[in-house]
Amino acid sequence: MAKEIKKTKSTHVDSEIKSDREGLLSSLADELNKQYKDTGKVAFSLDDKEDASFITDWISTGSSLLDLAISNRAHGGLPVGRMVEITGLESSGKSMMAAHIIANTQKKGGVAVMIDTENSAAPEFWRSLGVNTHKDYLVYIQHETVEDIFTTIEKAIASIRKTNSDILLTIIVDSVAAATTKVELEGEHGKTGYATDKSIIISRAMRKITNMIGKQKVLIVFTNQLRQNLKAMAFSDPWVVSGGKALAYHCSVRVRVNNVGKLKSDDRIIGVECKGDVKKTRFGPGFRSANFSIYFDSGIADYASWIKILKENNIIKQAGAYYKFTNIAGEEEQFQSKDFVGMMQSNKELRESFYQQICDAVIMQYKDPNSVIVENATVDTEEDSAGANDENA
Image 1 (cartoon, rainbow, N blue to C red):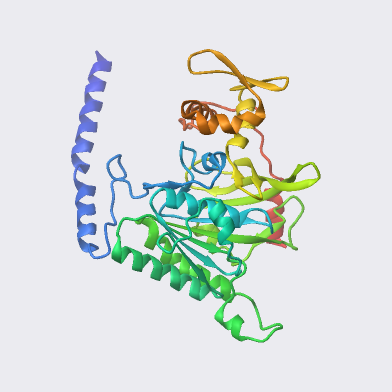
Image 2 (image 1 turned 30 degrees about the vertical axis):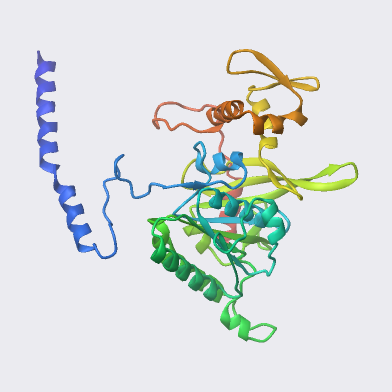
């Protein structure tokens, strides 16, 4: 009886609390949105019907496995309405991935702006990757300074939105490392003081652009070159990027592309095997990676990279020169690796089945924080302690 009375009392108190706060925050949101109506909506409820952080679309990097590692969702990739940084050493595939991003933007009915600071346009190669280089689909711009880059980004967004308020727009900056500043451009060769102007300008621009694109169908991708960090301590990251920390802070996604080996046919080098490390993502678990092959004559070989992950998750099993799997009808089939890409291109049903099974295997499901204890988890403190030592030095 006592328990029943206690339960009734608790329910009554909860009801009173709910009654006291009901409508309070809704009124606040209405007042704020009315006050800032000229700049757009600023207060949201974050429920299923209204989410300020909702991503309207995703653009593929060209590798569906890397897309999954970045977004932690099927048919994800790079988030529209956000900024992305792709870093890597020379010849690691940054510019090629940028071309794939442009092609995938155009496939979704969007347009693209390529800002090139390296004077390295390769329209014939871009077309081979599926990029439509016609002026109605892509505009190519050459700039030298970071000031001009960010002025053009603002003008591009304003100009296109004046004509079409809803079209998908991707802006590529290739690369940040090659861009200079107006002061540096006008100066003499030699030491002119501390090289902080570039990072200050980028930091100021990031604060403006982040909010500018947050509520629009605009994706901005910066490529950046890695530089060796001569002050790196043992076990810490030996690489840094040009332009300071502003890009790292403001970009929602950061991917580092690494070459892990060369692809050979007979004695000819025909491509490279790459690994994309997700250094930062706000849409899933960080520090994941994906491997994929890049061929010099055709770009990222997406389907070919599926075989390894299908095998690792026992979706297909190797039997000598053949791979075996169970099809949708429950029947066992087999194929050779050389036939896999053709199968994926011609059999949409099988392709979707394999893709869904890959998603089921790699997409992380969120849990209650107290639902499980992982007893075999260890703490790796080597890199953290090295970083701390670096700061104290």
